[in-house]
Image (cartoon, rainbow over all chains, first blue to last red; front, side, top):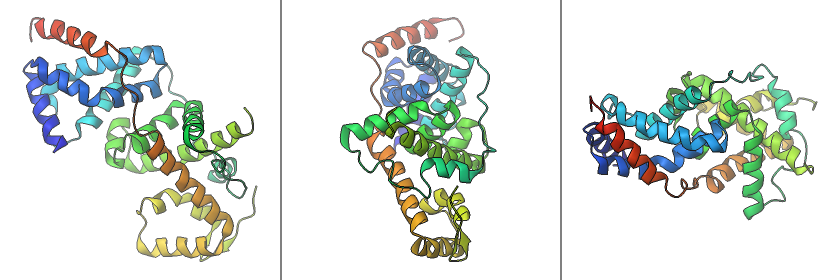
Length: 187
Length: 90
């Protein structure tokens, strides 16, 4: 149902329909802004958000109804962030041994990184740990775990193969657990 | 670095490598059964798998709802849209 609504809205946006554009913005601006904040600093995220929706208007007639409008907008946002804030792609230590990542995440150790936290403190610790990740790790977690995109949709947004999405997501989660443990030691 | 154990036909490192697929229900039945046998016999991996699942569940439950855009954003964007829609070629 949501997919049909988005397809209809984008079809109207392509014809310059202001009300449809406003509706599209209301439906998707919060997740697009969150994704933008995972890519650029907070002050620039609103620029990315505005650029995303204006680009969506300009290319609304290229939207294929079969795909997810949310994933389509997030892919536009990612391109906008790169265009507005050109910087070298972060080098991820993806060759890092999984066992090393696991050990930092608490594999084989106690206590659990979240054992003592709950409620607002848990939210704060998770958000802080997410903030400490490299952008490539953070965007994988935001797309898959927070936005709920499928592996295939995430692969489309990131421009990588589905298998690479799975690998990146798993390693990103392990690094997040490592960041939680590090934060829990009084950082 | 912890010492690897072999339980249920899998080493701890192999279980670590397929933990995400296991929790997503994306392992083929034969591998899933071996992972489950390992987890049943290895308290270290069982505990870590629980932590991993809990972190993912917390992310999805606690951080799922994004904050709304700042006040006035929609009005600014609609003005920009009207300007773009008024340009020649649109």
